[in-house]
Each structure stands twice: as structure tokens, then as C-alpha cells.
Image (cartoon, rainbow, N blue to C red; front, top):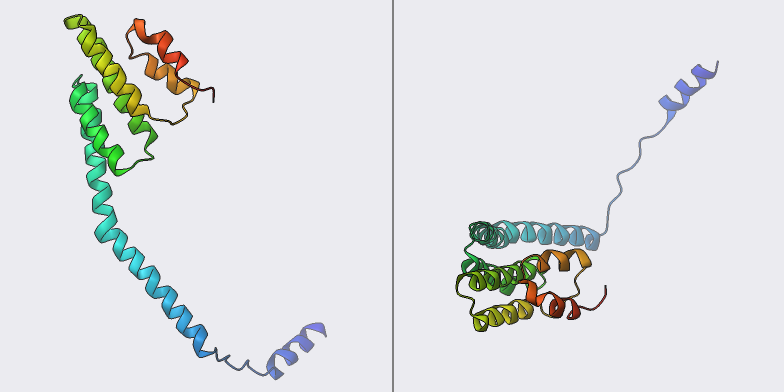
Length: 158
């Protein structure tokens, strides 16, 4: 009996009337869709190529660093940090490159003037950011032994 009553109520029900939304809601919806399409197009045509070029520079910088071309690596990473000022790993990579140049110059001619210069450039590249102990240890691996004590004292505890 229960099944029969459900059938009757379904057959007797009146369909819902379509709801008519106010014009301002329709216009707001069209505006939101237009903004969404604009941002998608802007990202694809403007932002994406820009980020692809930065990615290519990043690949070149890593390649130069891995092939012991530290001056070229520092230059390429510097160009990335100029485009992306909050790129902390880029700043660390610049410092690593300069610190590696310290070690390289020290092993070639022992001229401490150039070594000091590269050390200062590396420390300047790090800026005022706060670095974790792990990041500090990674940087320290590229420093000549004579700079380790000075390097450790230049960081604030994080």
C-alpha cells in the first residue's frame, strides 16, 4: 500500500516554476566569467613564457655550477634573483658559487685578496634573510676552512 501512495503523490505533483534571477546577478556572473577568462589568457600568453625563460636560465645556472663554472653560475643565479627577489634558494646558490670561487682561487694561486672579495660577494648575496642550520651547513661546505668561524658568527639563530 505504501508503494501505491508514493506513485500517486509523484503523479499529482506540479513541476517547479523556473526561477528568474535578477539582472544584477546575471551581470555579476558574466563579469566573473570575463575576469576568469582574462586571467587565463594573460597567464598563457604573458606569464607562462616569462616563467619558461626563467626556468631555462635556472637549468643553465645549475649546469654551469655542476661543471665548475662558478662565475657563470653566479651571474645566471643573480639574474634570477633580480627577477624573483624572494628566491631564497637562488641567493643560496649565488653564495655557493662565490664560496666555490674562493676555494678555487685559493687552490690555484693562493691570493687571499680575491678570496676575500668572493667571500664578501657571497655574504652580500645572502642578504638579511634567515637561514636554517641545514642551509648554513650546505653553504659552509663550499667555504675555505679559514672562513668557517667568521661564517658561523654572521648568522642569527633560527
